[in-house]
Image (cartoon, rainbow, N blue to C red; front, top):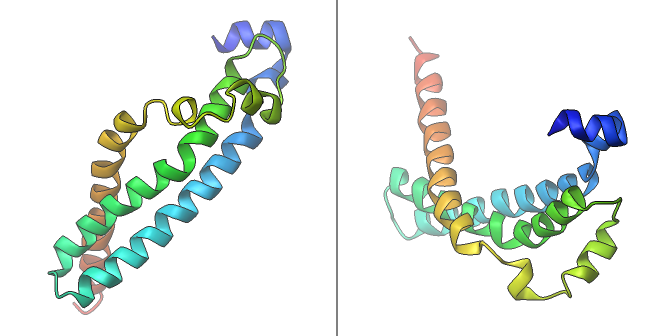
Length: 137
């Protein structure tokens, strides 16, 4: 695939859609961290045990990421797979601003994203605690 793109469009073609990808990840990761911080604080205030609070807040983070990022991801995919150069605005128009089209695959994204984010935050939490505790030995 990469060779055929490079042959037909040059090396520049391999970077098609990078700006839309950056936007997707920027807004998505922003929502990811904001949701995690908010949910973790609320859960800890509700006296949920710390390990459970981190895992549940991670699930909230995963849901937030894909809720915000999936429409941009759909636009990115259209930009990257179009037969000819396509701007993000034209791609969005082709999707008719339709929530049904922009959120296609949302259940699958959540099925993958919630456990992945929960696991990511849980591992980070436990590794950080272990590293902090080892500083005293």
